[in-house]
Amino acid sequence: MSAGTSGRPVILDVDTGIDDMIALLIAATAPELNLRGVTCVAGNVEIHNVARNTGKILRMVGRGDVPVSIGAAKPLMRRLRTAPDTHGPTGTGYVELRGEDRQLGTTEYTAIPASRYLAAHVNRHPREMTIVALGPLTNLAASVMAGTDLEHGAREVIWMGGTLEERGNTTETGEWNACVDPEAAEECLSHSALDQMFPLDATQDVLFTMDDLRALPETHLAGIVRDAVRFYVAFHQKADHIDGAYLHDPVALIGGLLRPDLVTDAVDERLACDTSNDVYAAGSLYRSDADDRQPVRVATALDAEGMKAELIERLSRAVASPYD
Figure 1: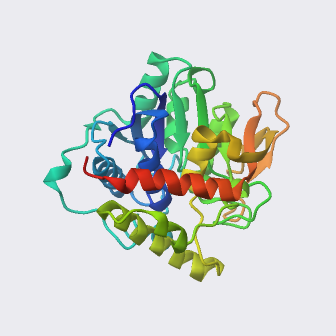
Figure 2 (figure 1 turned 45 degrees about the vertical axis):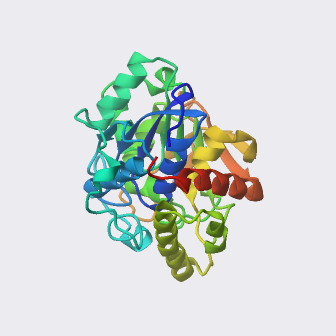
């Protein structure tokens, strides 16, 4: 199964846990997208788990042709913290993508580190590349710090991260991706490197249940997805007392690129990220009055039923014939 090479050129930046996995499956098989590469960043799990999960998922949908670049193993300035309670010990819930299956071939792991990989594509194809960042912004920030002009060089940069009015999922006012590397988020915001954001305010409009996954075909890959999401649901049942899970990353991918009409409300905001040593404040976003920051388009509401239907339909196609 292969997406077309004539679609919109995209690089995904991931910290492959459960919702990244679903976003990868959708991006790798979307006919509208030309997935030019995937960059890996430590976040939900350690970098070696991110790289392995990413490579195996791409192979499972016949996209071993997509280069995978290994990036930052830790945040810019802070100690790495991971989320095994949320995503499982290796990032994919009750299933662990270990071992090798020779039928799947190999994935091209590039020797170029993620920050340079992003820079090379942006510089070589000015205003053409769309970057979708689904984890901490460490790779993007490192690229910016090395002189990459994402503001003018990329066609668009979309980030799943942060929260405005919604209660945080890491601190009272902080979302996971922002809290793991606040300095990276601030670096990107201060250099106007982000065009669109999908914070919790939007991604938590859609609650997915195990019943929703019954629509998936009965394939090996669909079973892997169900086992991963079942772990995610169990976490949310215990932590949030809800019978379902928020699939933040694929929702951001679909709302940002594939079905922007499903975003029903958005605001333009100049934002900054708290980088203090206060563990309760670091990673919190706040409105900035700095004129040198360009406003970011921030999604604040989604068509929940439309988004759920779109995600399930695309995921069903992705897992339908995983070894083609």
